[in-house]
Length: 238
Image 1 (cartoon, rainbow, N blue to C red):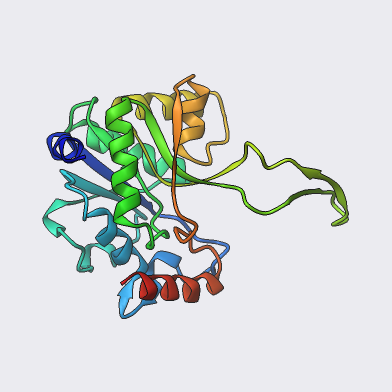
Image 2 (image 1 turned 180 degrees about the horizontal axis):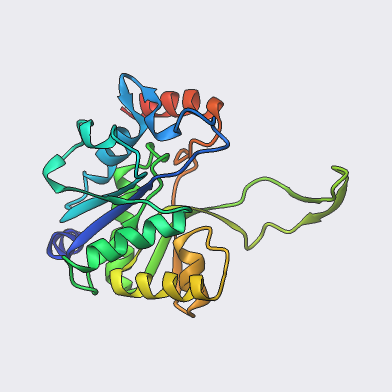
């Protein structure tokens, strides 16, 4: 294990946090990453978790009108880089990768992580990075689906029960080599694919992507109720 942790510190590791989103499901006026938990914004909590890894740097892709991000007290702020976000999350990620490709090697690893996932644990982050480096494969944090899944029609009527045996819920971070991910996203966009996460772009390219067991408390703040849940999780983790 120590050998692998040495490998992590020997590997150039970067992080990208797409934070330009409109967060439409949260509220039209309030971006979810700028809500406060314990007097600190969600985004600062998220960066703090990622910055526990020995990152070479991290890139925040923020909205063109965003004046708040640069004023926040991020962990390891000397490692913070900013670039413009895009219309969709995928464009923000690509902008950040284009930014990184000017200052990094395409074989460096990059973790892409949702701005609104402040509860990811260092153990999970380490497990993900170690798996990627040791297997030399792209990987994502994910958890097996544990509830019974129903396929439902437009009238909210159950059509059938879906076997959950091989189904996992994708989380973030998702890790890949910078050059590989950049190429995959560019190809997927050219082909008008709907890219909901980094893995879907990599899958399209035929890249092998592994799942690494995450934790169910790595929630994504999507609705206002989730803010209270995240507060409780962060409290219980500390």
